[in-house]
Structures are given as C-alpha cells and as structure tokens.
Length: 255
Image 1 (cartoon, helix red, strand yellow):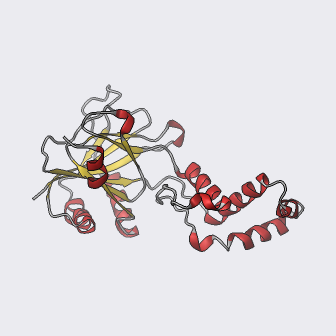
Image 2 (cartoon, rainbow, N blue to C red):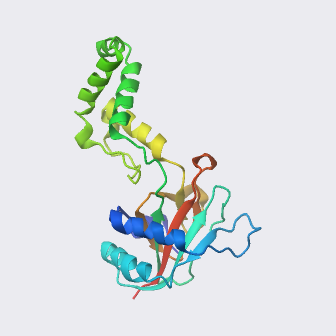
Image 3 (cartoon, rainbow, N blue to C red):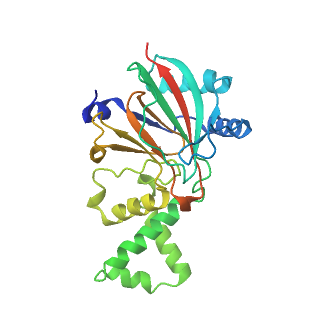
C-alpha cells in the first residue's frame, strides 16, 4: 500500500539528463532497432523495442541515470515503448516486487524544433498590451509601422530574455510568482499552449482513486523515477500532434 504522500516523496524527475551527443546517439540507435508487438490487432498494445542487449543503453546510459539519481540498484531489463495517439492503455503496474524501481527516459526529438524565445516574448507583449486598452503604451505600439514595431518589441523583449526560457524540453510548470506580472504570466501561458501536447505519465495512489492521481509531463530528455509497483499508465500525444510518444523503460531492483 502507498499513499499520495508516498507518490510525492518517491517520484522524482531529472530534466536534461543527457547531453546533446548522448541524446542524439540514443535516437539514432532506436531508429536502427527492430520494432515488435505482441498483438497488432489490439488497440491497447504499444510497439516496443528490446534494448537489454544493447550495451550503449546498459553500459553508458544507465550509469548516467544511476549517477544523476544517486541510485545503487541493478538493471533487470530495458526496452523502448512507442505509442501513437490511438494507443491508449489501462492503469497497470510493471512489477509486483516492492523492491523494484523504474526509470522512464522520455525521448521526443521532433516536436517544436522551431520554438523561438524572442518571438514568444514579443507575442506575449502584444497580447498583454492588447488587453490594457487604457494604457498609452498600446496606442503607441499600434501606431508603429512594421519595422518600428519590430524594433520596439525587440528592445522590450530584451528586458525579459535573461529570465525566461523556451526550449522544447523545458518543464511546463509555472513558477510560484508567475501571476505577479501580466507579461510573465502571459508568457508562461503561451509557452504551455505551444509545448504541451498532452503526453503524460499518470500515477495513482494504491486505492486507485482516479480523482487524486498525479500527472508527469512527457518532455524530451527528461527522466522520471518511480517504484515499479505503483499503479500508472502512459498517455500518448493527442492526435493532432502527429508525433508518437517514445519512452525508454529501465526496470531495476533495489539493493
């Protein structure tokens, strides 16, 4: 048995866990491996790739994960799980063993590669000022010609650029004080709308109360650690994203 507090305490995430070279090699190796499925006619059956015999994942990537999470257990299996938008699944567990641990490495290198921090800041400035109709800044911005508008937005965005980030593997959680500034608030809302393709790992308390589960975003180069006996399911991207959800599952036994 485990509770909500157990989930909060035991589920951990590490973003940007691999460097660019390692992440690229992981993607390239996955593309070369053979994909299999146990039942091609079952809509809830995902495609998978057995990676346990691949030394790059067992001897290079897993030690990196162990080091980042300060984990001392042993590896028992590795595979890649692939979901398209129709590959929904029921809640399940990966191991009955309470000494088991899962590391789920999220891979998605084909989403939103054109995300641009400057453009997103400029969009946020325009939207905020468009709502402040009594602000003389709005009338000044609206009267600018295209080249003047571009320069104005560029100058103003530079004031925020050092404190904001928009990459395709950023966490989408809002900072605690994001609501104190309308422009910053709007920036995070626009960023979430842009990057969130609704791919998640859902984890439930052991009473299976689906009203109080926890959702963890599927983010490129992010790794999530959770006990293997936790009730969970992975949700694929929604249909209009045109992308498959790809996760590398490391099954481990605590020592």
